[in-house]
Length: 312
Image (cartoon, rainbow, N blue to C red):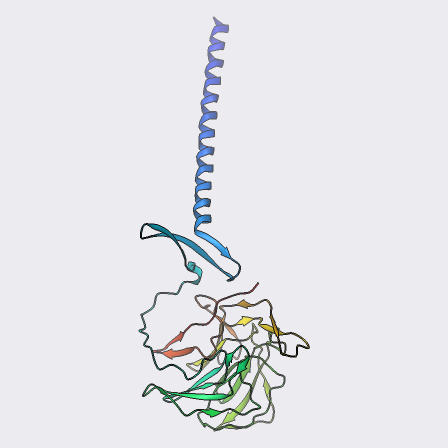
């Protein structure tokens, strides 16, 4: 009887172990199924487009009974909710432009130079009147002046005057008037690709330079061209920009360029009384080519357009 009782106990133990084993296998299978489903869901919604340099999901939606693939930006690059600004179409500019410059003086917008085509650069200024929505008053720029990728600011004197040249050439630097001094910072070096960090200033007043040399200021934390440079509440802000750009091919008789690595960034830096750069909250998304694409509206900084593409 003792042996029979032992056999029954061992049989029950084996049965329990088998049941526990099946339960364990079921839990593992369920976990693997859930993990694979979530991975498939994520993988089906996200794709990598190396040609654009921006990660974007591919969303399937129904359109007239057919599934249509729609490419939209991820939440990382989505615009933040804000009061809606109503755009109104205004008079078209006299000529197309790329990488020119623009300055507003009272009710007039002066638009300078820039590329007309890949083989032609403008050398004149067009004037837009905000009051009557018209263009007029075109005039030529000085021949010695850069006709694209230039830093620009105005003291409203409306006169061209020669100034002391920068200590070294710079490409698309950030430029702004602040506390009676003209500040020039960042940009790219002569090859247009290598970021520059130097920051200089010089005293100016009523269209005249008051000093005989540029003064070194604290370097900008992150170099590079195509950033917005804004003065607000007596503080100087440097916003966005990029590192890298087209590089000229050495010895090319027609000045051909090759595209190198470009990294667009969202950094925002601020200078105040301490004269040290402070990190501010970054932009909602990286943005470049915004040096003339900003405005202060009701104590808010509005940036329109720009580029967020990164070439890696």
